[in-house]
Image (cartoon, rainbow, N blue to C red; front, side):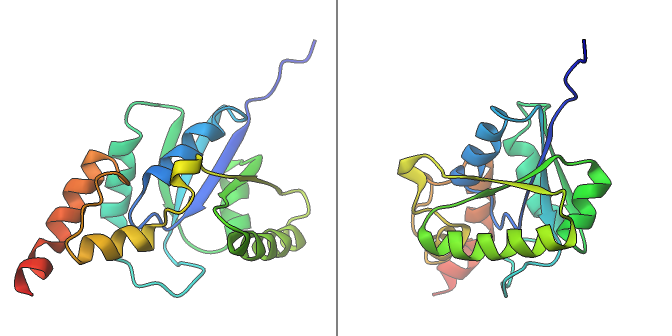
Length: 171
């Protein structure tokens, strides 16, 4: 009898900041994988100016997922396919909120499959009440002094409040 080898999923992104939508995808990935590596990319695939440093993003992720030792959070540089090989990932997981996400993610998946034909991709949709949510929307609302508590975990809310307090008070 062959025992099943544990499945490792890589969930890459910028997580600037981590939202409840990201949390939902990572935790639901554990339904199909034994372990999830949340990989924070040093270089975003789209032109973005990060609100939080790499260290801050990793700390937020570690706080958010501290309750589950099956989820680890690390940063990486370079090509996704190389990092996936390095950590022994069996699949790469990406979240899809809308058709526009699908088009972009499909292109990225195809390019990565060209570089590594063995790489598999799984696309998950977030819970319906989180389907509109993006980190950039959360950043913008927080930057303008809005309440983002329904969209992020308490440790992330604290950091967002601290990060944008001076900006809101200065207006």
